[in-house]
Image (cartoon, rainbow, N blue to C red; front, side):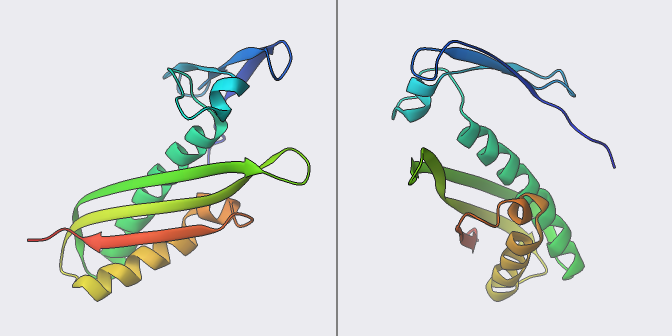
Length: 146
């Protein structure tokens, strides 16, 4: 399996510095980062490690859930996955205080209970979820109304 790479160039102190995160493997984008904007309610055009983790988690979870649904005999027509990653104080510095995954799906071949089980299984088997076992991950999963 491949290794993917990202790179950050940082200048200055934590409080006054800033940097750029480059998605090196794909060349897809470079994003600005800064601690003051990381800690603010309004990101104002910059990203953060928490947002990048949220992006990775939502994408990984969507892929894993589509596989689990298929293994259970269903067909995922569409999945809308959102990951909210929270940052808070720690005894020294900061820590991730929680991740909430919200998924809504249109799935044929599974009822609500089957979808809920698949969603939970995907949460437990998604590689990013496994990597983040030190953070509480909650799940809100439901089928879309017909």
